[in-house]
Every structure is written in structure tokens, then in C-alpha cells.
Image 1 (tube, rainbow, N blue to C red):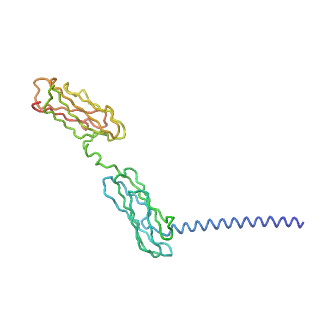
Image 2: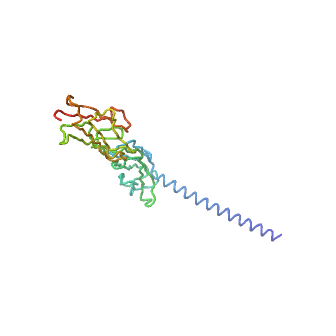
Image 3: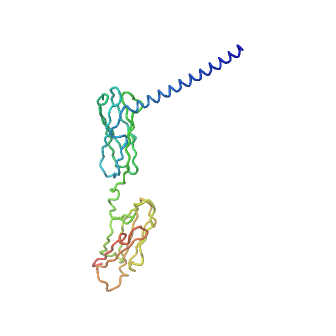
Length: 266
């Protein structure tokens, strides 16, 4: 019987130790969570911690976005640094020490040039109370459209094909009676283009070729228009004007037309 009682006491002792261990573990987790929550509340942001800046263009000037906060802790704090995840974003912040309840601000200036596509940039805020762990995270989201300047040398848009000019003038033929004009173009889309001319509308004395025949996305090409003077019927009245309608482009025929003019004296 005493042995049994001793065994019983031993079991109780082990159980008590387990309960004490569980209680200590619970307290440690609670303290860690409480401290983390307390740290998160050091700065209370009036404006929220995420700003959607909408849609910008690469051509737009840099824009500044203000995050206003107040010191929600019970002691004075001072912001020491604000780091960003992208060189496109610069940070400025209130430098002075802030008493409990006092307001401050963080300004993130975003530079869209060179950063087309979906925008998601973050900034991390540090104080003198937490030099290695950020007390807050700020986020800028939005969309940046590609610069239009990349197409400035190709102002005429025909679907995904862009041209430097869409009017061609022939003023004189070469020694062999052949004249040629070159139109430089570029594929501004995401897929290859196979561009040809609608032959049914071309006069017999005109040929149109495209080099290369398949234009890769983002690459330039040349459209060659050649006129053979010897094949021009007698008695036609100058200037001769006709359209060259390009095919293989997703747009209306009127939008993908090059106008050719053969001038007097050709």
C-alpha cells in the first residue's frame, strides 16, 4: 500500500510538472504575442498603410504619397530609417522625437520611369526602440503603362505595326526606269507579324515587299515599294495616286493604308 501511494504521488508529481511546463510555455507564447502586438501598435497610421496610386505612365513625373501616423505607445520614439524594396521609391520621414500621441509622417516618392507593369513596392519603418526589426510596413500598389516615347520615331499606328510615314512620293526614276522607296516600321505588339500588301489593288507597275517577311515582336522591318516606269501605261494623267493596303494587321483597311503618289516628271 505505501508503495502504491508512493507511485500515486509520483504520478501526481509528473502530472504537476507537465502542467507547470504547459503553463510556462503558454505564458511565453502569450508574452511574445503580446510584445509583437504592442510593437505593431507603436505607430498608428491615420491614412492606412497601403495606397493604391492608380495608373501612371513611364512618362509621368515622380509622385509623392504621404502616410500620416501618430505615436500610439506610452513613450517617446524617434524614427531612425525607412528602407524600400525598389530603387524607384525614395523615402523621407519626420526626424524629430515624437511624444506619445504626437503625429508624424512618412513620404514615399515613386519614380515610374523605367518600371512599366504592375506596381508593388514596400517600405519598412524602423525606430530607436527597434533598430533591427521594422515596426511597420508601407505599400504602394498600382500600374505603370509603357512610355510612349519609345514609339516617337514611329508615329503612325496600324494595329501593332507602327510606321515612320504613311505617304510616299516618287519624283523621278533611276537610269533603268526603276524607283524604290523604303518605309521603316516596327512591330509594337507581343506577337510576330506577317505583313503583305493587298495585290488586287496594286497597279501592275508597282511591287511591294517586306523584309523580313515575319517581323518579330519589338523588331524593326522595311517595306519596299518599287515602281517600274516602263510598265506605266501611256496616256495616264499625273500625278498618279493609289493606296497600298497592308494585310496581316488587325485594323480597318483605311487605318492600314499607305498612300503612294507618282509626281509629274517621273
